[in-house]
Image (cartoon, rainbow, N blue to C red):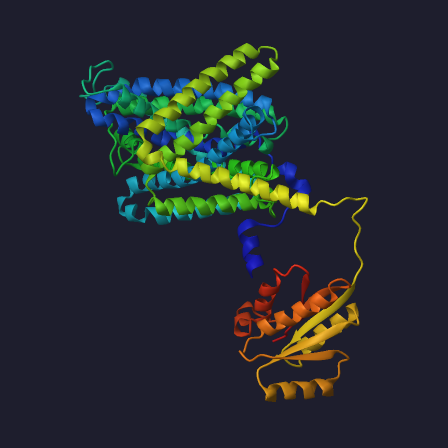
Length: 605
């Protein structure tokens, strides 16, 4: 039944040779890998306005120059990551760039930041999408955590079904969002030029007495949350069809043009309409209501906005498993992250990402505003390290035209470093958790790496000197009575060796005498050793006996404890029977020189 349910949800297993068919073209990749960046249009302008409102409504005009500055940074990042794509066509983004040019520790810092960022991406996207729904339907506001969790589970199932299938399903709402936002912007511009602006909006350049540089920097850093997700294309180059780097670079440029146009359009409309952030309604919702009223177009825009915010998480579902694969390949994450699932995706990475994202949504109560600063810091750290790494690469290799490339990365590094510091100083109360998560993650990376190296050293053999040691075999069969299960186990044991001994643990004279008499009558050709247990423990006398056998025969024989076990027809019946075999295996598992084997006997009833 479990397998049928898995097939229903995920689909049939795919052959390894079908992997090439899972690669993405530019249009599908734009939808899947750019959904995070494009969706930030829904809250980027709002974050700027939230910061500015501390100085009052008169300060809203600052949102326009701040938005232009954000666009400038977007241009720098697009140019920088386009260079990264061609320099490192195998993917990995900031992790690979930092590791190769700045050292392993710095690479792990970038990789750890990105992993945290992708988990936050899913949590923020699900929470922001829920905000869009509750803006249109306020009665659902108390169910935000449940809605966000359901969406994360849905996206997890879609991605477990494979990259291509998820792209086919998810691309439609993403492109609908892009079209609807452009329709909203064009309609809003027409309304502005026909006299539909807010009558009291402050003119650009109006003096505001209580606006400080600190406040403007805080607003700018908040607006830079719209740039999260820009790096995802450079991380996921292996997901592209050939030529992968050219398709990835073209996708990155298309994403930058669309994102920049939508972001500045929403910022202008918010300023012209005199929109201010509200707790119960998003800025995009207010703009749509002001442009179209609360009719069909309003609800359509809110619907596709909610969808894109939910689907923005899909960027992380594409990039996180690939990054985890690369870290696992370098022995900094468990090797389980290198395994492709039935649908050729890195299933363990997908499930891990979903589980931790749900935990974050529950812990933060689905509060988007509290998650976004953490989210932004998590991505601007690898932004900075990637730019610095590329700078050192150009200085070291000095290829043709390297000076211009070096200049682009230098400007990018200084800008992203400044924004990272601004985030830390202006929103430390909201981002301090990053300074706990990152050291913990890096410590885990190093411990995992150390473990794999030690295991490899211990398992490595000298092909010339280390040969298999041939020994005899002693098989110990614990028995609780004379049944078909025991008969089956002893038959198997005797097929391996003649040196077989059965062991029975009795609690009183009567049970011991009865067992000895039945064994003598049965006479299976195997000696029965009877142990008395004064304290009604089965495992303790057995373990002492096994230790004694091992001590006497370790030099000449391998010791195998062969545990009889019957398998019930239905899973729930298993809990109705004695778990002595399971307990015995648990105790024996850590015994160095004892082999544990189980002989199953399948029941028909």
